[in-house]
Image 1 (cartoon, rainbow, N blue to C red):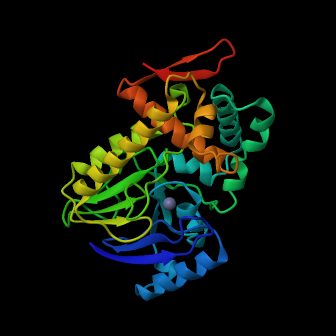
Image 2: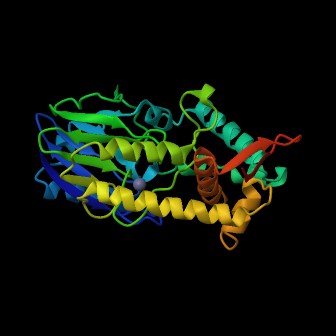
Image 3: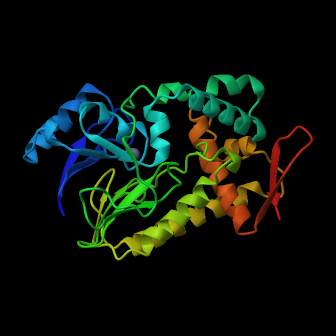
Length: 315
Ligand SMILES: [Zn+2]
């Protein structure tokens, strides 16, 4: 497959995001940057440098719904928009889905020990929508689906970093368009997001993420085109390194827990004393990820107290 990379600036800490123009039977762009004017210019010039105009693009495929990836679907008013079903709710700015989000986060914050007066101001899903586009999907991609116009290019559902995450494996070239599953310099955050399937309750994002890495590991990848930073090779080695580091960090959480019985908030305070208030959602997600992991490997156990708040302790 012929693939052309476009680097797009974002207002986020992560820096630039990568989009990829892929020429097959169809002309497709994977990810489109956040909906800012700077990103629009970079997208326009990048598509031009690849030898095309914005209006030549026939399909937009999204690796996941986060605003740095899913903003400028609006720059392609006539293209097909494809991605995981979860994207659609975001792209529609669906009011009922947003209320479900806010309800979900309120419940999670409460059950993990955030005092009631901090919960309301912490739940601000709508702010994240500012840089997300407003063209809904024209086609849903499910796990195992082939991308239309690209024979042999297959979507794999790889949740964890996002509840909408897909990677795209090309069986001919053995290349993969990997979104944020594995990145050159950073470990994607296992953000807690409400699942599409509401009966599932809370997703254990870090465990989901680790399972997704195992899906990637099974593929004999030559080059992985990532959502941020450089292309990657030698994927299994990188996965081992990341999993080992994550295990070490979880063991540090285990040490810090000691013989106490703590809520996630108390544990987060211990773990991230200087940034936990400023970055509550992120630090809580990380702490909870480690605790879920420790519980999965049988080192820690959790139970709800009389007020309905979870307490974690060593097993
Ligand atoms: Zn990203």
